View 1 (cartoon, rainbow, N blue to C red):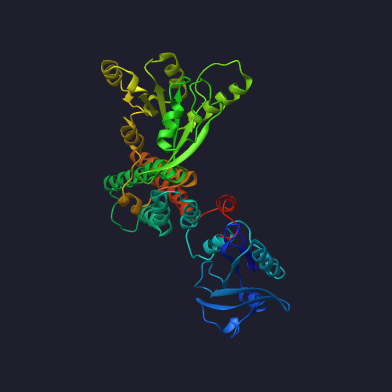
View 2: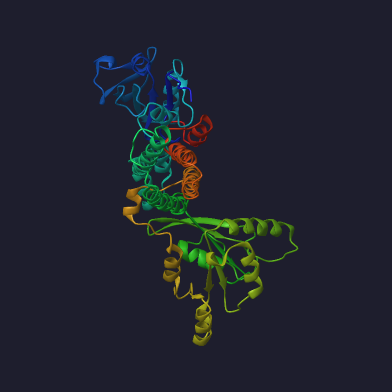
Length: 451
């Protein structure tokens, strides 16, 4: 990607009125541009890096605001360039007025351009740049910790260790290929095979973290499914501990789907109260049910809820949409059932609960978190957090498998070396050592303008 060296500026705080607003300026003219409109006891150009000073912003002779200005001189700044941050009063009018003045001599930053410049100036790696966006959007304790660890470089270091191993094995192969008559020690293919198998297991383990990483960042999607009036909305509200959904004794109340999110033991859980799986002649309701089908297919877990009637017909419909292992069977309204009836359903794998008596909800929560809980040690070791990273690691895994196959079938060391090179290329895309403009644009276009 071509590096833009012009000076950029933007508002870094969210739109709206608050105590303060922050404007950020980056580029070789950043200090000079601000010096022209900022009045203080000393010239901004002689004030040391990383020092905040109080002064006033003027438009010509007209006072705009009293502010605090902080300078960060190259290369010890976020972007690696000269950076100036202006903290003004949090009025929308004042903030926009200062930005208007700055834009006379600077360009409005593109979304994520400050972080993009930090990457292009080798201040941070690509995984760390992605982590900036994850930190901004973190909604729970676990998502914050995962993003923080990635920003600290955990994933980058894990990838670099794998790359070091691949480079070592490629070097051994290249020496054997290029200098076969130089009296070098014969290649121990059995030993190399064992090392590649270990490498493959490590990469497959990394690939497995992608599922947890995506759930940590985007949330565990949980759909509530069942016949009308079995109490889906009541369970929905019981989880949320609020009356977000409309609960009535009449079937078909939920015509579309409702979505809410909670933090459960630090994990983001996104609940979808669906319109149910049923046939209807109501055109509006048909649209809602079709949308529900789409949500159900995309869900990590589905709560299939009944109230005493097994409803096998609807369960069979559900099995056509999702795999059985994603379905959690729930028997609701157990406060209205006999003990023997409850035991009979529990033997069939149903979790008994009652939103009236508050029974079974804790067990449901435990079942929801099963198989997605991740230890802090795993987070510290580095996990994948988006589809780009997951796809790259999977390509690397396939390349190592090909390398093992070519070595086993004695196809020639050139094939093995080529396959390992392909694995390196895939992993280097994750860290940004090898990348394309399209990939960078996709990453940074989702950032806010001031970051």
